[in-house]
Length: 415
Ligand code: UDP
Image (cartoon, rainbow, N blue to C red; front, side, top):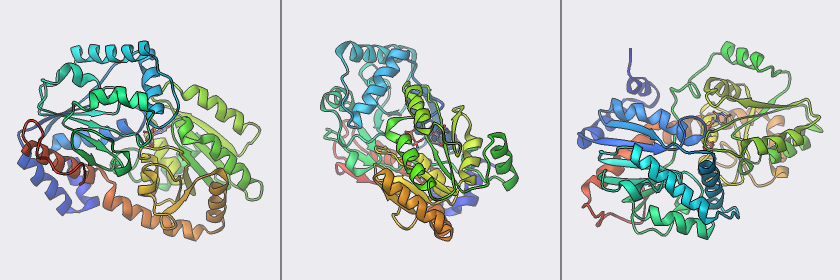
């Protein structure tokens, strides 16, 4: 059986894989742990699923640890997530104490006798407070748009983050005032996963039949957790404007992530907004329905990701990889991924979204052309191999630095 790296070579070319092997060889022996708060659901889990096996294939001993928490913990961390993305939220001291306590309990359970720990997002950020000495270097990887955070929440989180040796953000604008080097790394997708691998037309049709979605009209799709920042209600508003004059269907597919307790409330709002419209299909998918999401994205004519705040938005990259034109909210990392007017359109309102949907429905050949550019853009910049290369470069850089991290270049380094 061919290894994943060998399979990737068919997609990105031998020089890319050779470079990864050479960089990894310079780092060996090296051990690494990635930590986050869920194994399924959401972009971080998606990313880690793609990248962890590759680290190990490159000979770097890598583990993936997931912190455990109760309902109250995930309520706090979701509130923190919202606050960091600029949403006014009050998080009381007892809630923050509980958050720290859950991190402390996880620290007792975990063991990080490794060279590098990469801690993803705010949920496990306070582990460092209790485990600093165990690993040689600690990196905080922030996947959310923290450009205009609630000041109180950021001040609280910063107490932990400032103890790290470095932090990574998805956009230059997200970087914060921190006493350590900050790096820029774009998230990526795994072209070999069930979510992104090639599917035959029959496979796509079988999934659409199973999900009972007719293909008699063009399909507009948004895939995302039911989260207000993803603006599913705004997508329905846009769809209703278009649908009044042009036949089409809307599919909103979302699932739950174990670390996001807000889903059911937002889903109820979406159901209300979609009420009485038979051409809107709402799908509540199991978080591991990667194959179904893949088929939906391939069956769609236009893919929308109308987020009003977004860390990066892997769904945009996934859609581009499938050669689809994307209409994305002009927010966060979506702005980096979408070349406005070339691989899709950036929009800032339901009206703008409706205008672009209507245009693409009227000019399907433009959508196809955009999709071709989009796929090549992803091949060049947004696949897991590029992410891995950036991580390897970062680790070479950090390992070369003194233990105190001094002498590292810049504040924000573009890798
Ligand atoms: N996703 C999924 N099923 C769903 C909703 C989302 O598999 O019902 C996946 C989606 O395909 C993507 C990830 O979850 O891989 C979401 O990542 P993104 O960065 O777009 O958003 P996040 O949820 O991390 O804010």
